Image (cartoon, rainbow, N blue to C red; front, side):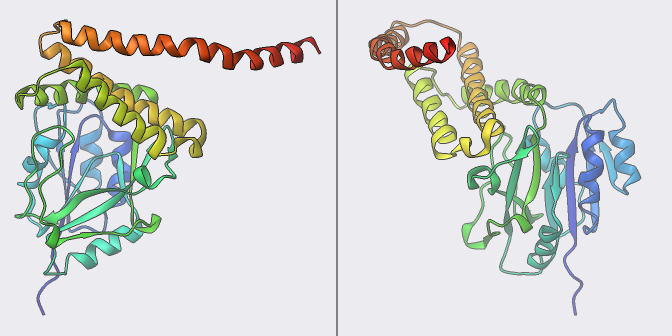
Length: 296
């Protein structure tokens, strides 16, 4: 009988000692753990070594995607589990990954990510079971360097885990508003630069269309109101990130005003102006009712 496939966990870390401990505790099932430390000034490297991880140092890079291949090159396992310090493997997921690694017909496993924002998990599947190809045979996947991009995978040799809480990767995405802003400051310029490098051309029409699509996805499709205030704030933070991307894209494209862009923005403005009068009419009964309640 052949030995079971070996699993290597690969983590990129920068000043996340407080998150790294729970992350490493959740991957004790793996055969090896490798941490690529980006010149952390806290105890990240020490925490990693205390949990038995092999630690390698690397210069600071603002986004993680270009480094996933770098840390994977240090691995000796047959399978790679690519993780960030703010992620944790649930016990059920650990069992499933060990089982699926033994299947010769598979090269990639898509893991449902349960995203926590501001301390709360999402209830809508879009954020509660967000699939990512993070478990794969070491020689079969190469990560693109574009921020937030996913590798190309062979669907015929990919298994997607079911949308169940028992087999998710828990992702503490934005614990605070400050963390959300810090992430945007790192990723938005990098995504904008990638757009410039691809030869994309900024237009106000394309910006508005893209942002409207993002807003529709987050505020309508994602039904954030079901999660109360945290859900609505999550949707707003995610849409705002894309606004930052387009603002950076505009600046990197030369920050030019054009006649076409100005005309398009003014047409939108005129449409908003048309809506102001009926909006005031609709608000009047509510104002009257509020005034009557105050007099009581």
